[in-house]
Length: 252
Image (cartoon, rainbow, N blue to C red):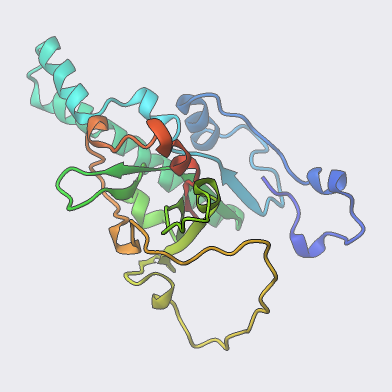
Protein backbone atom coordinates (compact mmCIF):
# COMPACT_ATOMS: atom_id res chain seq x y z
CA UNK A 1 0.00 0.00 0.00
CA UNK A 2 1.20 3.50 -0.83
CA UNK A 3 0.82 5.92 2.06
CA UNK A 4 1.86 9.17 0.38
CA UNK A 5 0.88 10.88 -2.83
CA UNK A 6 3.73 11.16 -5.32
CA UNK A 7 3.07 14.90 -5.66
CA UNK A 8 3.82 15.45 -1.96
CA UNK A 9 7.11 13.55 -2.04
CA UNK A 10 10.25 15.66 -1.94
CA UNK A 11 12.80 15.38 -4.71
CA UNK A 12 15.49 15.09 -2.03
CA UNK A 13 13.90 12.00 -0.47
CA UNK A 14 16.17 8.97 -0.53
CA UNK A 15 14.94 5.56 -1.76
CA UNK A 16 14.85 4.41 1.86
CA UNK A 17 12.60 7.33 2.79
CA UNK A 18 10.30 6.62 -0.14
CA UNK A 19 10.12 2.96 0.80
CA UNK A 20 8.87 4.06 4.20
CA UNK A 21 5.62 5.06 2.50
CA UNK A 22 4.96 1.44 1.48
CA UNK A 23 3.31 -1.12 3.74
CA UNK A 24 3.50 -4.79 2.76
CA UNK A 25 1.12 -7.53 3.86
CA UNK A 26 1.68 -11.15 2.90
CA UNK A 27 -1.45 -13.25 2.51
CA UNK A 28 -0.17 -16.82 2.42
CA UNK A 29 -3.42 -18.34 1.15
CA UNK A 30 -6.81 -17.44 -0.24
CA UNK A 31 -8.48 -17.57 3.23
CA UNK A 32 -5.85 -15.14 4.52
CA UNK A 33 -6.49 -12.76 1.63
CA UNK A 34 -10.28 -12.92 2.05
CA UNK A 35 -10.03 -12.42 5.81
CA UNK A 36 -7.78 -9.38 5.36
CA UNK A 37 -10.09 -7.71 2.84
CA UNK A 38 -13.56 -8.86 3.95
CA UNK A 39 -12.92 -8.63 7.69
CA UNK A 40 -10.04 -6.14 7.92
CA UNK A 41 -8.38 -5.58 11.29
CA UNK A 42 -8.59 -2.21 12.94
CA UNK A 43 -6.50 0.36 11.09
CA UNK A 44 -6.49 -1.48 7.77
CA UNK A 45 -5.96 0.11 5.40
CA UNK A 46 -4.22 2.96 7.25
CA UNK A 47 -5.43 6.52 6.91
CA UNK A 48 -4.24 8.47 3.87
CA UNK A 49 -3.61 5.32 1.87
CA UNK A 50 -3.53 6.32 -1.82
CA UNK A 51 -2.96 3.00 -3.56
CA UNK A 52 -3.72 -0.63 -2.75
CA UNK A 53 -1.96 -3.28 -4.87
CA UNK A 54 -3.00 -6.94 -4.80
CA UNK A 55 -0.21 -8.84 -6.51
CA UNK A 56 -1.40 -11.96 -8.37
CA UNK A 57 -4.92 -12.04 -6.94
CA UNK A 58 -5.67 -15.09 -9.09
CA UNK A 59 -2.72 -17.09 -7.76
CA UNK A 60 -4.40 -18.71 -4.71
CA UNK A 61 -7.63 -19.71 -6.49
CA UNK A 62 -6.53 -22.89 -8.35
CA UNK A 63 -5.43 -24.49 -5.08
CA UNK A 64 -8.90 -24.17 -3.58
CA UNK A 65 -11.21 -24.65 -6.55
CA UNK A 66 -11.16 -27.65 -8.87
CA UNK A 67 -11.67 -27.36 -12.59
CA UNK A 68 -15.20 -28.21 -13.82
CA UNK A 69 -14.16 -31.65 -15.11
CA UNK A 70 -12.35 -32.54 -11.88
CA UNK A 71 -15.28 -31.32 -9.80
CA UNK A 72 -17.78 -33.37 -11.81
CA UNK A 73 -15.57 -36.42 -11.42
CA UNK A 74 -15.38 -35.94 -7.65
CA UNK A 75 -19.14 -35.48 -7.42
CA UNK A 76 -19.71 -38.68 -9.37
CA UNK A 77 -17.30 -40.61 -7.15
CA UNK A 78 -19.00 -39.26 -4.02
CA UNK A 79 -22.41 -40.10 -5.54
CA UNK A 80 -23.77 -36.63 -4.79
CA UNK A 81 -27.10 -36.20 -6.57
CA UNK A 82 -28.66 -33.30 -4.67
CA UNK A 83 -29.13 -30.61 -7.34
CA UNK A 84 -28.98 -27.71 -4.89
CA UNK A 85 -25.69 -28.95 -3.43
CA UNK A 86 -24.21 -29.56 -6.87
CA UNK A 87 -25.28 -26.08 -7.98
CA UNK A 88 -23.68 -24.53 -4.89
CA UNK A 89 -20.43 -26.40 -5.44
CA UNK A 90 -20.30 -25.51 -9.13
CA UNK A 91 -20.81 -21.79 -8.42
CA UNK A 92 -18.78 -21.49 -5.23
CA UNK A 93 -15.74 -20.06 -7.00
CA UNK A 94 -17.77 -17.32 -8.69
CA UNK A 95 -19.53 -16.45 -5.44
CA UNK A 96 -16.16 -15.95 -3.74
CA UNK A 97 -14.83 -13.95 -6.68
CA UNK A 98 -17.88 -11.69 -6.68
CA UNK A 99 -17.62 -11.07 -2.95
CA UNK A 100 -13.94 -10.20 -3.29
CA UNK A 101 -14.60 -7.83 -6.20
CA UNK A 102 -17.41 -6.03 -4.39
CA UNK A 103 -15.28 -5.56 -1.28
CA UNK A 104 -12.39 -4.10 -3.27
CA UNK A 105 -14.79 -1.68 -4.93
CA UNK A 106 -16.16 -0.62 -1.53
CA UNK A 107 -12.65 -0.04 -0.20
CA UNK A 108 -11.75 2.10 -3.20
CA UNK A 109 -14.91 4.21 -2.87
CA UNK A 110 -14.92 4.60 0.92
CA UNK A 111 -11.20 5.35 1.28
CA UNK A 112 -10.90 7.34 -1.96
CA UNK A 113 -7.91 5.34 -3.15
CA UNK A 114 -6.87 3.49 -6.29
CA UNK A 115 -6.87 -0.30 -6.32
CA UNK A 116 -4.50 -2.12 -8.68
CA UNK A 117 -5.16 -5.83 -9.17
CA UNK A 118 -2.63 -8.04 -10.96
CA UNK A 119 -4.62 -10.83 -12.56
CA UNK A 120 -2.82 -13.65 -14.35
CA UNK A 121 -3.83 -14.97 -17.75
CA UNK A 122 -4.12 -18.44 -19.21
CA UNK A 123 -4.58 -19.71 -22.74
CA UNK A 124 -7.79 -21.42 -23.84
CA UNK A 125 -8.26 -23.45 -26.98
CA UNK A 126 -11.59 -25.25 -26.55
CA UNK A 127 -14.29 -23.95 -28.89
CA UNK A 128 -11.98 -21.27 -30.31
CA UNK A 129 -10.33 -21.03 -33.72
CA UNK A 130 -6.91 -20.51 -32.11
CA UNK A 131 -5.22 -20.27 -28.73
CA UNK A 132 -6.70 -17.26 -26.91
CA UNK A 133 -5.51 -15.39 -23.83
CA UNK A 134 -8.12 -15.08 -21.07
CA UNK A 135 -7.97 -13.57 -17.56
CA UNK A 136 -7.82 -16.20 -14.85
CA UNK A 137 -10.45 -14.30 -12.84
CA UNK A 138 -13.23 -12.90 -15.01
CA UNK A 139 -16.97 -12.75 -15.52
CA UNK A 140 -19.94 -11.77 -13.38
CA UNK A 141 -19.46 -9.14 -10.69
CA UNK A 142 -15.72 -9.09 -11.32
CA UNK A 143 -16.22 -7.46 -14.71
CA UNK A 144 -18.57 -4.85 -13.27
CA UNK A 145 -15.92 -3.66 -10.81
CA UNK A 146 -13.03 -3.43 -13.30
CA UNK A 147 -12.68 0.19 -14.42
CA UNK A 148 -9.56 -0.19 -16.56
CA UNK A 149 -7.85 -3.31 -17.89
CA UNK A 150 -4.37 -3.39 -19.39
CA UNK A 151 -2.96 -6.68 -20.60
CA UNK A 152 0.80 -7.20 -20.57
CA UNK A 153 2.23 -10.12 -22.49
CA UNK A 154 5.12 -11.42 -24.50
CA UNK A 155 4.88 -12.50 -28.10
CA UNK A 156 7.09 -13.94 -30.78
CA UNK A 157 7.55 -11.47 -33.64
CA UNK A 158 9.22 -12.35 -36.89
CA UNK A 159 12.90 -12.99 -36.26
CA UNK A 160 15.58 -12.26 -38.82
CA UNK A 161 18.39 -14.72 -39.35
CA UNK A 162 20.86 -12.36 -37.71
CA UNK A 163 18.65 -11.80 -34.68
CA UNK A 164 18.83 -14.16 -31.75
CA UNK A 165 15.77 -15.87 -30.36
CA UNK A 166 16.47 -14.57 -26.86
CA UNK A 167 16.56 -10.99 -28.15
CA UNK A 168 13.14 -11.42 -29.73
CA UNK A 169 11.70 -12.61 -26.43
CA UNK A 170 12.66 -9.34 -24.77
CA UNK A 171 9.70 -7.68 -26.51
CA UNK A 172 6.64 -7.12 -24.35
CA UNK A 173 3.32 -5.64 -25.37
CA UNK A 174 0.77 -3.60 -23.40
CA UNK A 175 -2.78 -3.21 -24.71
CA UNK A 176 -5.73 -1.39 -23.18
CA UNK A 177 -8.78 -3.63 -23.22
CA UNK A 178 -11.09 -1.64 -20.97
CA UNK A 179 -11.35 2.08 -20.21
CA UNK A 180 -13.85 3.99 -18.05
CA UNK A 181 -15.64 0.71 -17.43
CA UNK A 182 -16.20 0.06 -21.13
CA UNK A 183 -14.55 -2.64 -23.19
CA UNK A 184 -12.52 -1.43 -26.14
CA UNK A 185 -12.85 -3.41 -29.34
CA UNK A 186 -9.94 -1.72 -31.08
CA UNK A 187 -7.33 -1.37 -28.35
CA UNK A 188 -5.94 2.16 -27.90
CA UNK A 189 -7.60 3.34 -31.09
CA UNK A 190 -10.93 3.18 -29.26
CA UNK A 191 -9.95 5.75 -26.63
CA UNK A 192 -11.01 9.38 -26.48
CA UNK A 193 -8.98 11.54 -28.85
CA UNK A 194 -10.41 14.95 -27.87
CA UNK A 195 -7.39 15.81 -25.75
CA UNK A 196 -4.45 17.42 -27.56
CA UNK A 197 -1.76 14.98 -28.54
CA UNK A 198 1.83 15.31 -27.43
CA UNK A 199 4.92 14.36 -29.36
CA UNK A 200 7.35 12.26 -27.38
CA UNK A 201 10.93 12.43 -28.63
CA UNK A 202 12.32 9.10 -29.65
CA UNK A 203 15.05 7.84 -27.38
CA UNK A 204 18.10 6.05 -28.82
CA UNK A 205 18.12 2.33 -28.27
CA UNK A 206 20.92 -0.15 -28.45
CA UNK A 207 19.03 -2.66 -30.57
CA UNK A 208 16.01 -2.43 -32.83
CA UNK A 209 13.57 -5.16 -33.63
CA UNK A 210 11.34 -5.50 -36.67
CA UNK A 211 7.63 -5.17 -36.02
CA UNK A 212 6.62 -8.63 -37.13
CA UNK A 213 3.15 -10.12 -37.10
CA UNK A 214 1.94 -11.19 -33.69
CA UNK A 215 0.25 -14.47 -32.95
CA UNK A 216 -2.46 -12.97 -30.74
CA UNK A 217 -4.37 -9.75 -31.35
CA UNK A 218 -6.35 -7.71 -28.89
CA UNK A 219 -9.69 -9.06 -30.04
CA UNK A 220 -8.44 -12.55 -29.32
CA UNK A 221 -8.00 -11.81 -25.61
CA UNK A 222 -11.39 -12.79 -24.27
CA UNK A 223 -13.05 -12.55 -20.88
CA UNK A 224 -15.03 -15.59 -19.87
CA UNK A 225 -16.82 -16.52 -16.69
CA UNK A 226 -16.39 -20.19 -17.52
CA UNK A 227 -12.67 -20.75 -17.33
CA UNK A 228 -13.03 -24.28 -18.60
CA UNK A 229 -10.90 -27.24 -17.65
CA UNK A 230 -7.25 -26.97 -16.80
CA UNK A 231 -6.57 -29.69 -19.35
CA UNK A 232 -7.91 -27.40 -22.07
CA UNK A 233 -5.34 -24.67 -21.36
CA UNK A 234 -2.36 -24.53 -23.65
CA UNK A 235 0.82 -25.71 -21.96
CA UNK A 236 2.87 -22.52 -21.94
CA UNK A 237 5.02 -23.80 -19.09
CA UNK A 238 6.19 -26.80 -21.08
CA UNK A 239 9.40 -26.72 -23.07
CA UNK A 240 10.73 -23.58 -24.68
CA UNK A 241 7.58 -21.47 -24.22
CA UNK A 242 7.92 -21.13 -20.45
CA UNK A 243 9.07 -17.51 -20.75
CA UNK A 244 5.77 -16.42 -22.27
CA UNK A 245 3.85 -16.57 -19.02
CA UNK A 246 5.88 -13.90 -17.26
CA UNK A 247 3.58 -11.06 -18.24
CA UNK A 248 0.39 -11.03 -16.14
CA UNK A 249 -2.70 -9.11 -17.00
CA UNK A 250 -3.37 -6.05 -14.89
CA UNK A 251 -6.82 -5.14 -13.69
CA UNK A 252 -7.09 -1.65 -12.31
